[in-house]
Length: 637
Image (cartoon, rainbow, N blue to C red):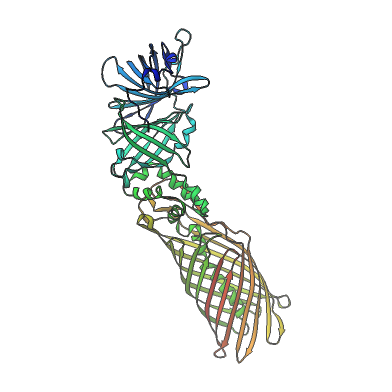
């Protein structure tokens, strides 16, 4: 810790800088002319100003020196001037303390600094803050000059970074704080640096849960010295020390001091930067959370995160790291991490497959038939290749079909069902769906037959998420639409009187759209989710088989493969309710390949009535497995 007092080492041990300081003149070069001013009650939005300060020093003895100071401030169109008497000390390590006493009386100003060589010239790198109702802070690398040969530049406001740019990484960073002098008790707190220009920074801070809120204004010199001032609206506290590290491991080690007398308290404060969240989630294998991590990090470095309603959540996010942090951030993602639209399309896809299967069942002769198929499906996407999830659905499909000529079959089907999905982090999606479809086939006689399926549907979707790390929950409701068009060619090949093989080629296009929605609850971490689109274009090849077992029984089997030429990425855009920053969540693209197998058993209950059971399995190399069981009832008229 730094310990500066007016009583320093004896003259014999503190005269290293006497020759440099004696009868010298010092000025502020252009890169250091910028200063900032802010009202005593709030430091979070400081105003830039220009500050040219000229020093004239007398004889220095044993590190002790005195002289005069003339400061000119430019604040907008207004120029202000002030003359003061200087009394200062510098030790052999180059640590400087200066007291400025106005010639007209009033509050003294404390300047703290360090001797530092810049470009071969020894500079006095100084920092200060002063004022009563309007607080002014300034840092500069003061350089020596000869008044007879050099005219220093006038005070001017230059609100750009010309110096101390190596610390610009502090802008937009959150910090963990341990400071009993600022927050009492354990001293736990959080700082958000929202802005940085030319070595100056500002922001807000508070104790746990947004308690004891303060605003801050400070400066960092190129040499890494930090002067930090805070206000709770009435009382100003000041700290001084140093900074080291970078955005991943930065630390400020500061000590409270009196900005009027220069006396140090001996009370230390440690500020530790919070490393960027996106690096953590990437290292933990959660690439879908990178956008959310970047947004939450930016919010944790803003005043928005100190709202008492949401501050506890950001206290937690900035207090953990590693897998715990990655899991917390994953809880804030849109439900099913971008896969919601793709999952809401599953009932449509299964319905179109069910209509296609009707074309295989609709053997002659009959004029018209009615059919009913209750079903149940469950599926799992393993974690790893993409975020994991599970869904299951159940429903009933029904319809009518008939031969309108010797070659043309047409049918109309309807489906009503429900689906329930859950993700890795207590996020859930419920889908209620209704679909209507037209299907048919045309017999080409010797060359096989062609078939088509046209279907569409509406969905009503509801999502819920648990932000268990913050003790919050949220959810939303939205509508969706989907449609599908498919064409196929197939041909029956009689291998034996009892066995028929049917190769089939197909192409299917599907489209799903889900509306935008705003979640309720979750305080500021509820989501406003944009509409989402999911498209698929699958080319398929199947081999179906039918074998007569006798006594009216028939067994069917299927093997097939699908390739999705679009393989749409499962991406959704959203923003947190507390912010206008939009981010994308993508669970990536699934494998374009999907392999299928099925087995069925059918029997006739009467001349015109048949019943059967069917089991289908679908699997992809990316760890997706879907299984369906259904009961089939058909009545011919």
